[in-house]
Amino acid sequence: MDRKIKHLEFIQNVISRMNHNSFLLKGWAVTLVVALFAIDISKENANFLKLSFLPVFMFWVLDGYFLYQERLFRNLYDDVRVKREDEIDFSMRRKSSICKYFGALFSKTIFLFYGILTVIIAYILNRGRF
Image 1: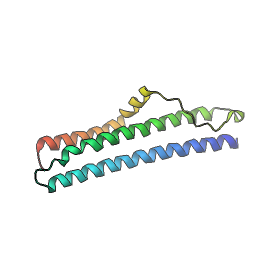
Image 2: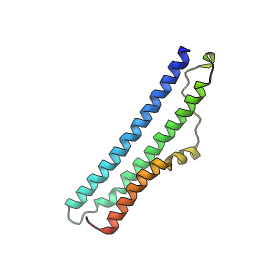
Image 3: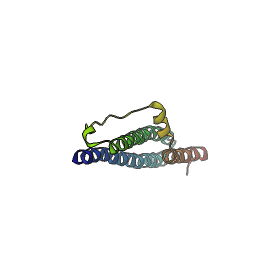
Image 4: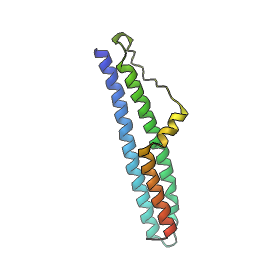
């Protein structure tokens, strides 16, 4: 039973790391967008606000990737959980699919967060300066 528990701990550590990375990306996305807003306001005729779509898109793609990886490791966790002790090989291989990546990219939590951020940027751009 020790081998199974150790393998499950390895997988759980990776899942926790993916979740932490996703949290950090959301924080960085908001920070960069707010910084670009501040630069845009402080400069005369600056178009830094238009640049804020780029980090939102990049962080959206990265966040989707981390959620996708987290889901793959959760599936691996479930597979290892039902294995017998003699079948434990400490493999970290996952079964991946590009369709599942797009599912993660447009999951409710990620889509809402980055979608709302994108709508706010578009609204402020259309509205003009604060």
